[in-house]
Structure formats: structure tokens, C-alpha cells
Amino acid sequence: AAGLCGDLALAYDMLAPDMTDDERARFARTCFEKGLSAFLDECRDEVNPYLTGRRTMNWLAVLSAGAGCLFLALDGAGVDFTREIEIARAHVLRFVEWFDDDGSAVEHGGY
Image 1 (tube, one colour):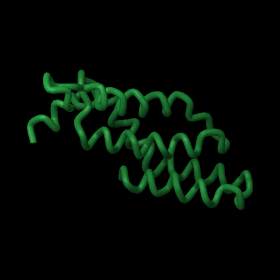
Image 2 (cartoon, rainbow, N blue to C red):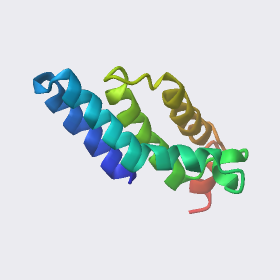
Image 3 (cartoon, rainbow, N blue to C red):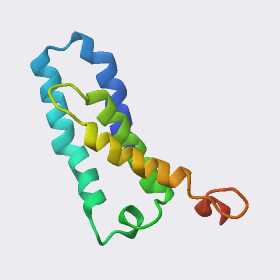
């Protein structure tokens, strides 16, 4: 899903100039319904300690980065994704800033 979101962001960036306003809005709605809403549901899931707890592990940081890229690409295409961009950004930064004593990400330090 994360790779797909990143790929969709790149595809949209290339195609959007040749799309009508209605086509851009439809693309944004479809991306939200088919993928981005699932990412947001994970963020709101109080049972998932990796998204609602104090840290974000590697895989979820990848999801957040892909979703964030797609939210950025689609923002303004008939939808305001300002709030969603901040959700993805917070998860990416939480992973990046999650350091072990040696300065590496705690998850990476165990490898």
C-alpha cells in the first residue's frame, strides 16, 4: 500500500496538468476511498501501539511517507488534505526522531 501511494503521487503529478478539474477530483476521491482512508483508520486505531503509542516502527514510517506524498500531491484537487498531511508528517517525524543511545533509530540499532 505504501509503495502504491508513492507511485500514485508520482503518476498524479505527471498526469494532473492534462486532467480536467473533475478528473483530478475523481482521482483524489478514489485514492482516498481505496487507500488513504485505510491509512487514517490505522492512525486512529487505539489498539495499534506503533501508531498511537510513543514510537512508529519502520514499516509504519514507510506507510506514513507514502501516504504523505499522496496527500501532498492531491491536496487542493477538490479536497483539502491539510489535516491528513500533518497526521502523516507527525508519524514520519516520530520515526526519524526516535533515537537509541548510539544515535541510530532504536529499531535499526537492533539489526
